[in-house]
Length: 501
Image (cartoon, rainbow, N blue to C red; front, side, top):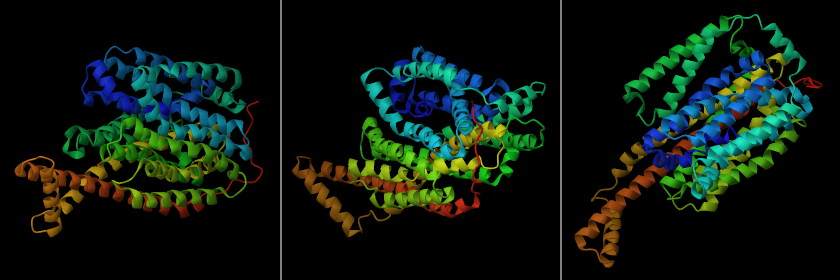
């Protein structure tokens, strides 16, 4: 439900803008406001869960998410919708870390892989089906229903959580121990302002042409200063909001790095493929979303398989296979990403590309808890979710920038060959002119249209080459990670997680 909301509103933006009398640029704040609020809550959710009690914190987040979703559907103006989206992002930001910590505490090590696999199906399937569901609801009903549908699901979640979930004994002890400890307001303020500024830079940077915009540059400098100060402050604080010293654990630090890359590849390509299909091949938003749906279904098959294998073989080998498979599929994509690609090919490229991700997601989650005391499970899950989302934001921002700049460079290079001295170019123009003239255009109009079509073809080819360059770079980066999996330590045999009951 929560991950779905990061992508479900994308295709509804034109409808939202038209309904509320806003411009297309203004309507993008519906997405940005949610992401900024979500990013701020993620790193501090572990501290909040420990202070409030994890069950109470989780149910509070679900209730806030449900209430704000309902208010988003009722919003009479863009300003009110953005405000309610901020509240929705704050509620949603606490869900993922709490869920992962609950899983880590509930299941023994032998069953934890399958638990993370089933949970991971929601995390990876939601971004794939979000645009499709959002487009279908918007076309057949109203954009307001993309928010209303969260309410009944949230009510069911609240009921089940109340009946089935309990805080483990160690968490109750930790909550009592922290009652007399002063709140780290400095750390809280630094991380909120730093992450909020960074998320704004990543979301609006390409739109504002990055460093040619003074406010983007100022925000980036501010975020760097705030986050560096925050890291130093938290490292030396006795009771920090985020326990950065956990990064001394080799497995956790490596898992954080892998999750950052996984977020960048998963979310980046989730944006890249539909964008290619819509801008260069003329697909509708719904059809482009349907091309991603196959990837979601293959993940539903691969996640349980990965969960089963995690308890049967070396998790590091499984991760290495996952990275190698993902790299190979990205390389395969570079050879088939053409303007003549049909829908089936586009859908299968997505299927191949996500097939290996299950073998990265599940083992890295399992290994990240190795040698970490149970009372730190909240911190581990919070930081893993946070770094995956930040990786996704950075991946989307960088891919969009590289494609734009790469298209410009390729266009400059290709245009050097489009001149009257090139016999092939001359032959193409003459052929187009003759065809258009035979269709009833005058010789001068036919010549003008021939040059216009040649220019459009140039732009399409330049963009296609830019997409291919970006995917090739991703393939190389992911391939380099395969051998790094063996930096991590395997869990000791017989290790188990404490039970909730």
